[in-house]
Image (cartoon, rainbow, N blue to C red):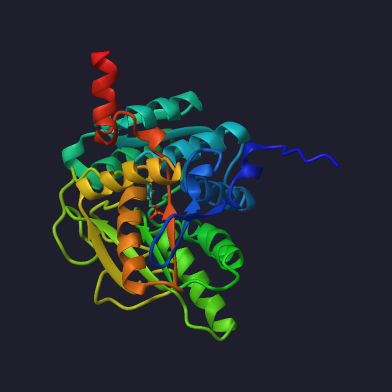
Length: 328
Ligand code: PMP
């Protein structure tokens, strides 16, 4: 029987769950970098665009516009290319963004660079200005507030995890950029656990040590754990001490991870399990390993790996290998 996809977007989601080596609790990694655009953000981009199509907000020549740390830009540019739309995204001007800049361009997107010291606010301002300039042609996808972002995980990633684990999972560890993944997964797993009369898994959100906005700590724009720790209040995840309200969920715990530990972990898992993790995956994994040793044998910890290391060749993650290649 033939098995052929008609659009690259048909291949988004249904990512594998891989058992990593662990000497304590079972540690399972959801490999979101196996989405066709290389990151978890393919899911949100597709859900956002399909929602706009259903509401007849997009036509030929429409341009998707958003602000992004990179992965949403790549995902939107890929979805736009396959569906015949344009794409304009803003992203901070930092040299470690070179791969993401090139990838967005490769899909035919336009990139506007914001000043890094202006943080998320600077790039949001730039994206909004671009949308204003494009007028009616623009569709501002608003990943930080568009409910479809979190719904992609409420309807996709969360139920997938439940099925893949046969309903047995004790903790989920993940980072938050917009918080869409955290909100959707948390709501899906809490609802499924309640339907099945079991305890929901503990949801642990990881923040960069230098950007602990949700748990009430410091924020520095240059924290280096690309994709998480935007430094703004989130529409999808409550700050510590706030209470659940609709799509804005209170997770069970916040933990932090330093850039050095995130990168060590990302480098280690490539060599131990053959999984090439990016910086935010490394941060989540470092915390997931701590949680696994605390919970111990017989328990199961799931970690979300949003994007792969290959996307970060210009990032300090690859400093040593870049230097040795240059010295050859
Ligand atoms: N890790 C990376 C590398 C990302 O690009 C993102 C999205 N910015 C995330 C994690 C977090 O995903 P979300 O926006 O769903 O919180």
